Length: 301
Image (cartoon, rainbow, N blue to C red; front, side, top):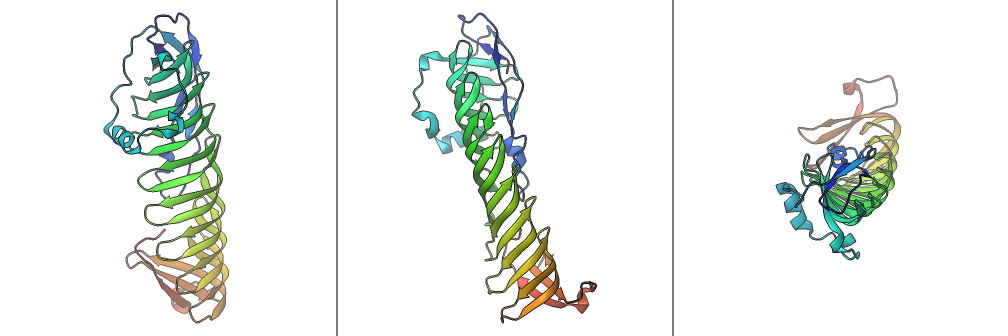
């Protein structure tokens, strides 16, 4: 990250690494959790010296509002830092850094503001790279809090936006292993993530009382699993792309069990799920199949 420093005592060009964080863009889809390429570590560029900078620039209203709401970033507020070494750096990408500078590079606590997109980062820098607790506030008010190692998210982190909150462990910028996704519409997922996406095995809980346990793929219910309803009926078998589809067994409210082929159709307008059953896998005409109906609440995946 090419930087311009206001210290007249610095006379030589040094190396600086750009930190470009685009995590919020990966969370626009409400079904999937995607963090790949979210906290990019960009190649080094020269830092020039001599221009006078006196502020971080005008923060966007959404960022200012979020800073007031969140208050001080407690993860770094108790870390000792020599404020006498604080300086402003104007970086080649147009961002401005304010914080501890040693020998012309970022070392210690600091803040960085990307004027072009409005993102705002608070973190600890070691040898010009973000290493330690970090909080990024995006121009739209989304927030990521976690831990950075060599400019990459590694360790436990929390991402929040208007639609959801995600908690889990990042490995080189990607959510990996077990985590939790809590959506504002009442749907909650707890289970495995792979490469930043809901993938593996996990549990969905729905606000209407349904629960799903089993395989998930690309953020969807897909594979072998178990779906239960509040009326104590349940289906165990094959799911495809959030629908019952394939071989399985369904037990109804009267404890009658059916084995065979199933598929489901959801009617959004009336919030009703129809489950079709047949012993013969070749029959696909709905009017010839046994049918079970499930009435859902206001939220549907």
